[in-house]
Image (tube, rainbow, N blue to C red):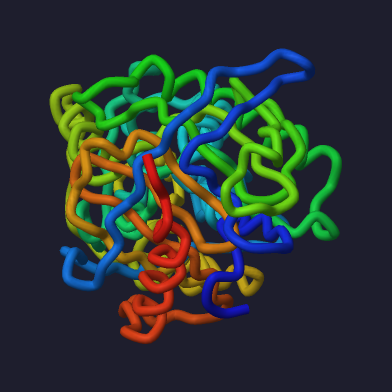
Length: 358
């Protein structure tokens, strides 16, 4: 799969479905008309581009306890396109596996969002923690993420078990509740109404879910959905979370681990492996592979207070810019934005928003 395949991408037939003014309903109850200002999409408004490598496992994230010599080793990686969404939840599962019966200091390997949330939960449980990482924010995959709290593209349904799905539901639920108590400017988390061009069943954690009336859509089409969710300005969030860890007495050290023996040499007797894609080489997980996602970030538009996902890709508004994305490139390990893909992202969103009237 290459450019503009998913974010879900929840594809639907027909032309662009996102309305400038829409009337919605939940059951038979009507919602007031909503007028949406268009995003000003132009190549000369792009302030930066980025590409991130999602750590995808067909069997989904791995939260599992094992041993490394005389150490306890707890894995917490492989979140695919849902690393932000599931971070607090899988970290909660991991610390529940690792901390009971343990005494003394704890090591966390990896300083992306999964490593930092794991470290913070370790601290909250009363243990001293050191985070070891080859790269620190802003040079992590998590920094490149769009930041929507909505779990997609993180497992192959044919490869997972009912027990794993129950675990995933627990993780998503805990993350959902944890992010809510952090909403605000400090951590860069806010609620944003989200429009989905195409079919998507209602799931937990989709408040204000609506199916909008087709007759209200100026561009035609078959279905448009709306729900509310949280969005994380990832750079700000990671920076504040790292500060919280350090204020709590934790250490964050730059160190690269090339072999399990190097991990085994750490002084801590409990280690959490939150290395993402790095787990493939470090611990021999041959099921793990990269999925590249590319982004174009436009100049900020404060009036854009909604998000979009669909055939054109996806658009998330943030204070540091308007995030445009939509690529899902499997087995691509080059974290370099490609001009042709960026141009296609810009062109597809320009087509979407051209003609919006408010």
